[in-house]
Length: 214
Length: 337
Image 1 (cartoon, rainbow over the protein chains, first blue to last red):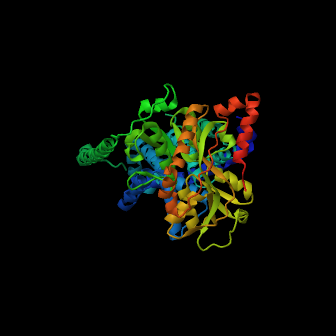
Image 2 (image 1 turned 90 degrees about the vertical axis):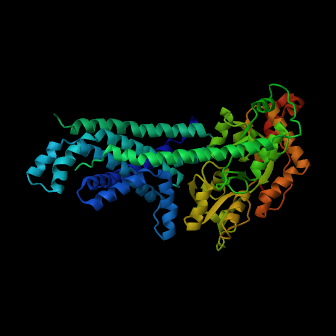
Image 3 (image 1 turned 180 degrees about the horizontal axis):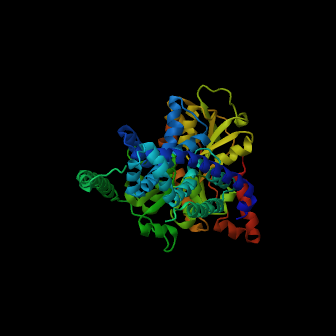
């Protein structure tokens, strides 16, 4: 285990990259996901179709395939970002589908009477969704969104296979230099745990804060 | 607000999809069966299998009826799973088959399902051997002292050299030191990565998990060079259709060995004897010509087998066993030009 203790600085730096990857892509995934969920329930058919195609395409493709296509496929047609930005974009797109489905389940859980009352008051679809339904929906899905977030922390390891020195990239390099795979892997496993556990607790706190008192 | 779909309509389209899946799976299984049966019929061989002392690894593998080998899947000429027909090809594969022939008798073509290949990426090689997932690893596995603390090596069966791959049009890189300050690609967990860090410390190293990604990155101009062992680079030159070239400035010695579980000296001696035999009777050269030779690499002399710390030698130098072991090791692995 000495190699882990000797490289705590490197692990911290790499963990920071993982945190950046996760937070940036989750922020983007959240915005896209809520939008897609809104599209999914909107009365406009093309928007609904777009949302279905978006979710089914990106949710059902392995993230490593998306990453490969984005990094090496789009380069061929002139679209090129750094490996880090590519990873953020791919993770955001991929995770947005899970956010969208989670939020949609929240929307479906809002009592029908709420919508009917809103309509009776003459609210437009946008007002109905933004003022009545979405706030209630989001409050009910804090816990499942937390699971999506924790899954994203771990999915971010895909960047390590594409030249980003996140936790995964770092333990691979550490293993290369020391030829001791097990300690290097264990160090990374502990680091992921250290990132994921507080996320779980934070989700619990947020959930209690925003819960609808009935 | 809520989309609603009747469950019956779902079932209506599920049925044909399910039926199609079953047919496809059945077809796939069917074709599998035929290949296996032809392989088994071929396996009937006149050459009797050798006998081994009971309890040895060779006897156990013979009894089990299968030699499990960890190989690389993505390295043309060395160890490659052909994606079109799932067959295995490359020098490592041929060496592994010749080892299996030493256990089961017959010929490489008659082995059939007596040899099983498992993908062993660089980071998996030691754990696979330590946990017994594989019997041997033949995966361009460079013999070095750090690895010898965890596993043992038979061989070397090939002496390769690390080199640099660049675009055909690039004449700016003549040696490894020219890589300083440039973006260079290598693969995680390989000695190649370690070596380039040592020889060109200012190079900006981008690491992927497979060499195929390195080749893509080189094509796209995301890196200016890929560095690893000559045979693998030769493979990429041949599949690139003239887009890449090897700089031809070798800067390390990479003795490839057959990895086996640490401490299994009888098995190691067997593998070393077997290697010496195939080198003497021309099978080694034939395997080279059939694989790496096709990548226009000249047939080299087989490197001398390193029977480090073998039981016989240990008995001869009982007074200072550890010292003797390390000095033998050092002599063979530190011949960097």
